[in-house]
Length: 315
Image (cartoon, rainbow, N blue to C red; front, side, top):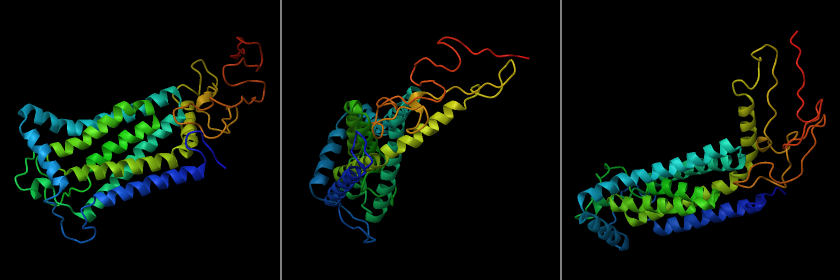
């Protein structure tokens, strides 16, 4: 059975993904205002969520104007910052040759897009009216979206929490930064007056459930193709092959040991899939390369002692 140190075998990964989605669906349905497939807009004008909306927006309305405008900017800024953190994780993994982490970052991005697509679809099906139109005397700081731009669930919250939770699962040490940012991004949608609290809770639930399921299912299988792409990309950079300046062919440099896909010649053989956040070839035994060379910093024996260089005739 296929195994990996982070989530177990394929069956266990499938079980975790299904459990995440089932829990997410249960919470989402509990928060839903109804109206799925009715074809008529849903107006929420009473209940705990409306009370919470009015309390938060009235408090913001009593603050200085500069503070309210700062909240309006921050509601977009949290998404931008989380996106930059994801790009930073991917780029540093690329620079370090950590295929497992780079694959995880790509899968987090894919999971975020999947959650957003599902959120947008459900929004159109449920058709909940925005609180800035439905609640009498609403104190909306931001401009109320046009009619037909529905409220449930919150797309901003879905995106923010998908990024925050995905990054926290991929690199737990980032959780102290990404999870508060995601929560802030969701809460600000209520503070500026364009969403009910149950809208952002539903979006957060959707984003967390989908990105977790996608990362658990697709993260480990994505490591091998990511390592292969990295190895080929690094092996075909300008100047890495072709003709030498002084004439004569120059062979491409040997692949770095941490970018060689499992099973490739000269690679370390890890015991199972590479762990998220762990470079390839970190565990397992070295495999000899035909001709006596070893990968991993050991002396080469391809025609001389360590430090010798093969002579090149320029006839």
